[in-house]
Each structure stands twice: as C-alpha cells, then as structure tokens.
Length: 56
Length: 165
Image (cartoon, rainbow over all chains, first blue to last red; front, side, top):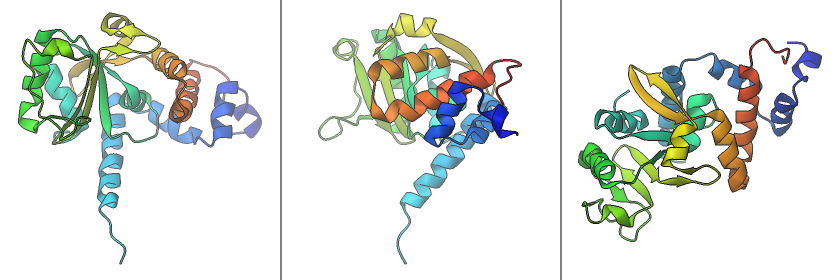
C-alpha cells in the first residue's frame, strides 16, 4: 500500500493521526455482520478472562 | 452464539420487541475495532413493548444496575410509563434501553435513521453510520472521539471505487 495514496482521504488521515489501525477497519469491513459480532465476542470473552488474572 | 451479548438481541427479536441497536455495539456491527461490554437499544417505551422485553429476559435475572441495591426489574403495565431509560444488568450482559437519543430524537426518528441487517438469519435494525456520527457529535463526549474517527473512516472506506488507499 503506497503511503502517498494512503494519505489521500482526510477522514482516513485523521484516523491514522489519532493512532487508529486502518488495516483493522479494512479487515472488519470485509467481514459479514455475523463475523464482526463473533470476533467482538471473542475479544470480550478474552478481556473478561484477563480481568480475573492474578499476579504470581 | 448463545450465551453472549448477541443472545440478548436474539431474545428481543424472538419476543417481537421492535428496537434499534445503538451505541458501541452498533459501532462494532459497522466495523469499529473496540470492545464494548454492553448492548444499547432504542425502543418505544409503550407498555406492550416493555413487558415483552421484560418477559424475554426474565430468566436472566435482570436488575436496574444504577439503582441502590440493584433492584429487580419488575415492570407492570402501570409502572412502565415511569421510565424513559432502563439501564439493566443480566446474567449474560448489560442492556441499556433508551427511548430518546440526543441529536436524533425519539424511537420513531431513530428507526427512520436505522438500517435492517441480518445476523444468523435473524433480522434486526441498527443505527446507520451517519446517525451514529451525528448523535456522538451532538453529545460531544471525549470518549466518543475515537468512535467518530473510526466511523468516519469506515464511511469513507465503504465508498465504492474511491482512490483513497
């Protein structure tokens, strides 16, 4: 992905400048609604598990 | 998908509750990358809807999560009218039900600004990207800044055949 083209849209550039990983957005857009929800649930379940972690 | 946030929505659809998914979960549906721990919906707070909603989640031990002592959800036809919003916790996740959304209006307006989606053969309504941006901008909360940036980028990325990449 050439950087000069990547920077063309102001909305994309603003997101990049904020630190948003555009490649993750692009990947999500390519997924179905079901797949997005499923992957979100996996992330949420993982975060919930990590909440219960304890220092050893 | 069974014992998870989506299950809450599935229950509402099966109970015939007319609603629109809003907030962070709607952002996720549209492709945003962050994780949210609750589901927000906007619905008509008429007694029939509220009682159907209550019945749909009754076995999940719903409570008002913002009240002292986390009171049980015990709506009746008479008490339904007392609420404009419900902030609930259940055994499988939090469910926020709003009757009005800043920057958009009541359920009728919100429904007009929604789109119909299908997830695992279940049809439901989700607030559009444009409407999500509109309401988040109108609320002007710091925590929505990233959401707005992601949604605006998603909107741009969805445009067909744009030379943006």
